[in-house]
Image 1 (cartoon, helix red, strand yellow):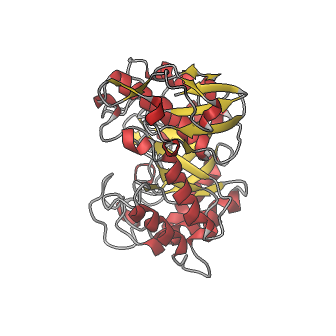
Image 2 (cartoon, rainbow, N blue to C red):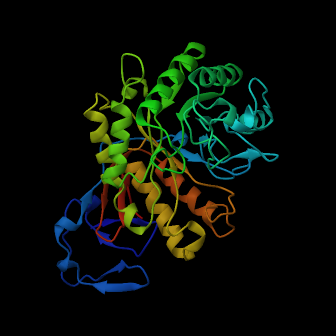
Image 3 (cartoon, helix red, strand yellow):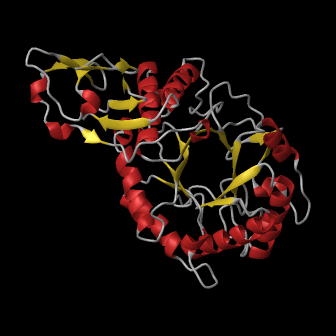
Length: 384
């Protein structure tokens, strides 16, 4: 029997990487259930309860692990290599377009300057969008972050804004995500075609200044649902207002993979389903980034401590194993129930798992029916 370093749960004597389940009839294993542990007879477990989640062997770098914060200058005390701008603020000013350019040509760079300086040396993802009221293509209406922020912009104003941001920060910001969670009606009231047009203009404008920049598709949330994946497909298929479509302007695919106990077990399926959407549109090798992942329904703060620790470990392990190229946690210091930095072992658990996932090549990964994840890393076995 292979011996596993147990990162979550109860020690098990299990075959190497769960390739097949062969346990003698005298062995009793304990399986983590929602409220307590139950003894089960291993021989009653069908082999079909073991799911392979490894796409191909891979070695991660620190940039795989991303973070969000309310404070634009937050001092993350955990190991990470990527920072995303969404929902950050400095001195009461957000990093969104409507806050940076509240009127045509009048820029306030205080929050952006602070954010870029605070996270120098990290991979920065800037979420572009959130049109100010004066720049909308049609009459401005109420939005979640101020009037106009869920609407399609006048494309000339959009290009002018991106020119200013890219010129100022081209040496620091290399990743540009177009809008946030556009399949949520509250956040976007435009069309798929308008998003494709925004992608085209963003790519043309930003890459004229920095050819190395990468455009991330408008992020989709809830990708475990077929309707969300259809929304992504519709953006990629939509006309860009010129001679092509949205897919032509995407360097990276952005999705959001919020988790609860059930959805963590579906992480590999979510990746595979999104990969299918991309592959049928000529993007079989385009990286898929989870630019926002966290605990929702219930939120991190509303889970018992042991449950949140277990879900954090398994969430990171699953994203690392099944093929995502970034995993950006939401978030660090929020007061609305999402704060990892909660003084209840969140940062310690994060660093424990990240250290393991960075320790060498991940060569095998499988999941048991109860959600436990087995990884082989650098020829060492870990059970989460």
